[in-house]
Amino acid sequence: DAGYTHLTAFDYAPEGVECAKRLFGSSRLKLMDDMRVADARSLPYDKEAYDAVLDKGTLDSIYLSGGADKDLASKHLGMAVKELARVLKRGGIAFCVTAACVDAVQESFDECNEEERCWKQIRDDSIHMTDDGYTSNNIDATMLVWERV
Image 1 (tube, one colour):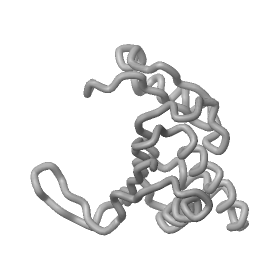
Image 2 (tube, one colour):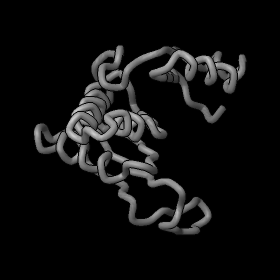
Image 3 (cartoon, helix red, strand yellow):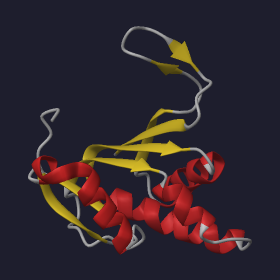
Image 4 (spheres, helix red, strand yellow):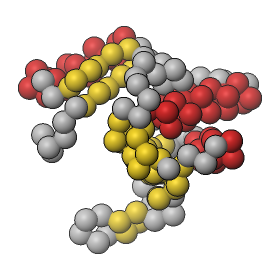
């Protein structure tokens, strides 16, 4: 609807994909190139295939799926962040909306940078500005944005 083309979506659960199809409806589904079940830790997409990625809670879910084992949670989250780096074109944007795991998501991007310089953070959780100039740092979720370098 906003002029985007070549859209792809995935969910870890088949039920999530079916729910998205119902929510999108037939007219918006025509805009989708691909909608499938996939694991964010091992994406079935080509290297440098995308200009942008929007994550709304997927990284939180990956981290939380580790339960009490924070080493496992961090490992799985790190795998997903590396996959984002693999599938994004240089100059591409990773826009993450996180609520439950802000620190863990931030740390995963930072650790990925320690191994291989692949991210430039362009928005942290310090302040948010709307198009009409309203600013706030008090929202129900945190927006973190990185550019693939």
